[in-house]
Length: 105
Image 1 (spheres, helix red, strand yellow):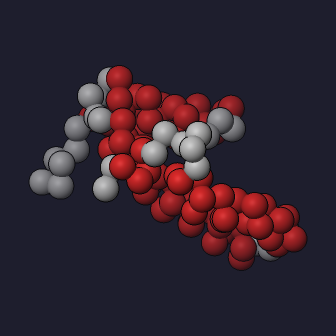
Image 2 (cartoon, helix red, strand yellow; image 1 turned 120 degrees about the horizontal axis):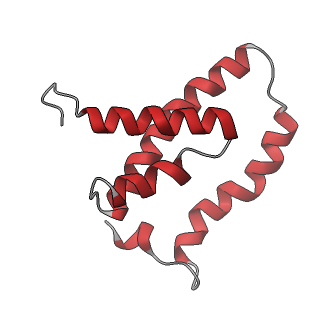
């Protein structure tokens, strides 16, 4: 897909998901990942990885904008990070985990 041509179906799906996210506040990954799998035939692991990379890029830009506008409560960020960062490293190794993040490599 890096050949320079853009499949309009992907662009339309992105536009519709963007509109729904803007109207509802629902996370785009909960909408785009199933669309990539069901409508475009992308493997589940690839759909998740693709959405994670896209989310990382867009959230980075959003974080910068909010940082410049001083609309981030850093105390809340620290509290969230205290639990989420360790579990990000531990969860794939837990017995109840699907192991997808580890076995995909």
